[in-house]
Image (cartoon, rainbow, N blue to C red; front, side, top):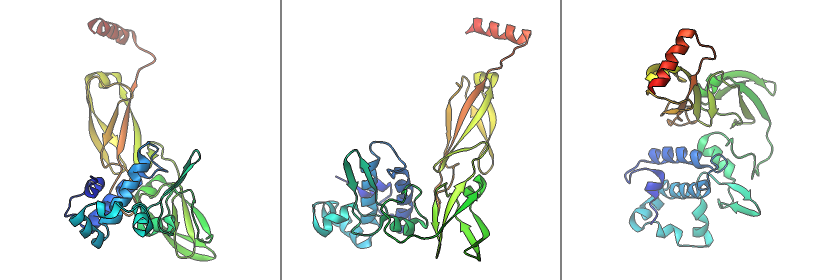
Length: 283
């Protein structure tokens, strides 16, 4: 039995806004253009289906009374076509097998824009049926992309105020009244971005790694104290939940991952070498 509430990770008495927030996070996480795991395609379909039912008050009421059978028994016709609906669609080709999630003739990327307020950076322009619009590229710093920014520039001979929402990524295309803006993000000197998650390498001295320590870790907002466990190995990764980049038009945030790198000195004093040799005898 399929539980649409469980698929979205919400309670039965969930509000409309909570349904939308849950869908937004999961759809971005499992969109097959972004998530390359084998189960992403099927997971994405389930998330779309659950949202399509639970976001509609009439369908939600029917689902609560009858269950998912009321929506998924039909194999064709209008009811059957609804099985793949939702604010996303996905078109791809694995080998010779094409996969088409039907939206009843609606442009899937127009739906994406209506829901998120900007064009999917993962769509690659596929499936677009609208006429070509003028697009202008805007370069942002890492901090501007994280926090959002409003910039004044001249477009088509007129001064325009361009408001960029927090959390956009390189390749995001934002639609305005009569033109589009494509965002490019300059790399950060310390943070590496993967979607809404960020990665930071933190060097540890050999004593810190061996004995444990408390170290300062920069995040996009402020520094935090992080305890290093005794015996930490180089390459150990620690997750800081919710310390990543916000999803555009959402309260949800990605995570920050700290990758520890143990700094082994290339040159040792005679005394230091002797101490390490003594330590080796103890291990």
